[in-house]
Length: 305
Image 1 (cartoon, rainbow, N blue to C red):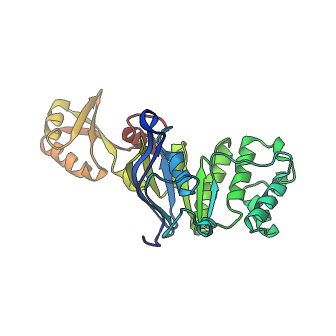
Image 2: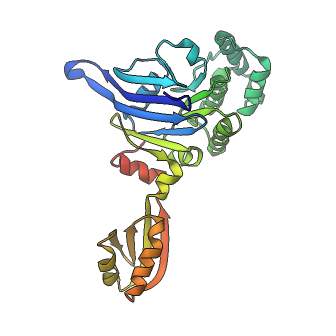
């Protein structure tokens, strides 16, 4: 496996239970994430996201297949896991200690204690002014910010984030979005992001993978996936003649005064030329790019994240 990939899963499956209680949580999953990417991992509840992340972290073992990080197997590879930082299933801290003291203990436990780095991370997640308060008085959003700092204590090459914006207000969500982009662009880290906030994933991720019922059902570059899923809305007359011309080549739906054509943006010139040549009057052409939410719902059969 190539070192150009931070994450590679090949034919990975995970089954829990036996016989009638047997549940296949992940099914023959193939997934690759290049070094330096921000990769969005999406799926409805129960799709296998958390199970996949736990296998990548070597918390549980796959029933079949191989998992490698930076070209090395994860199973029992404690040295490799030092290159990984994670915020998974919420941030957990000692409530009776301050945020700063929690980070100090975690850093010492991991063998990466550096007071200057702790101060820098507290500043990056906007927690400097609240670092000396006990965690028991923190809001969910403050704990998430502290969790982001904790995930980066060891200056990891790969950062795995599970719902990092949980509990944050809109301003906090924007801060975390910028923070994640900086991790990749300025600090050259690879980020694997699982989130149900599809609009945030759309704005921050380079690549996206959608998992449903344990299987990867869609993957690719975010911009390219969305660009390939467009609807061209046409205000024309007569509609019947236009539909007759377009239907042999495209899917066309009549929606009131509009004709909606399922086609890529590049098809617009050909469509317009065909209609003009047939004396169809064109009053308006609107190209609507599908959102990541619409793509997600189509890929998962309408199931929410």
